[in-house]
Length: 198
Image (spheres, rainbow, N blue to C red):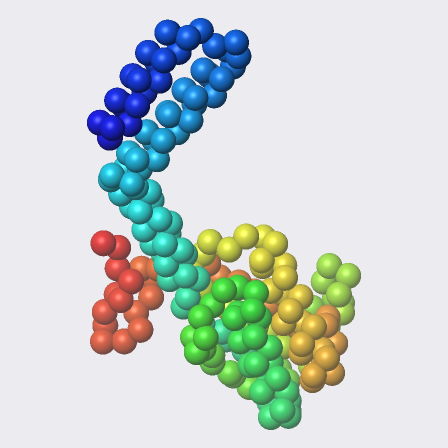
């Protein structure tokens, strides 16, 4: 560092002794020297705050991933639905969670309930221009809040498209509801709040 400042002094003395025909050269030299000083300072320890910033960003990503976990899917459908349809609906929800909603692999909690014809009630005259049949599937997903409207729209489409394609159920008969919660609203066993605020 002292050698650098010594060279700056010598350069200044040389310029004073011999006036330059190109004044811009002095400005360029000054900029280069300032850049060198900044570079040395960064190597000497000013990089520590940058490392801390990187760690904060990594922690933010980790927090976001944790917040994206914990879905519970409830699937209600007719008791006459074939087992293959139940499998397709289950997989469609799981695929959408992983591929669209950023839920980690293997985070799959689902409850399937089959109903007699009089146990799933819907408006026979239709609702919002949609008309339902006895094939109606009601899906309710409870998860940690924080996802955007766009993500939720893609999530709805992804589930409906896969069920329609693989189980041949009308998209109108795929009814989905999302319930947003906080992380502390969950206990995964032992009567403990595993994601309690710190």
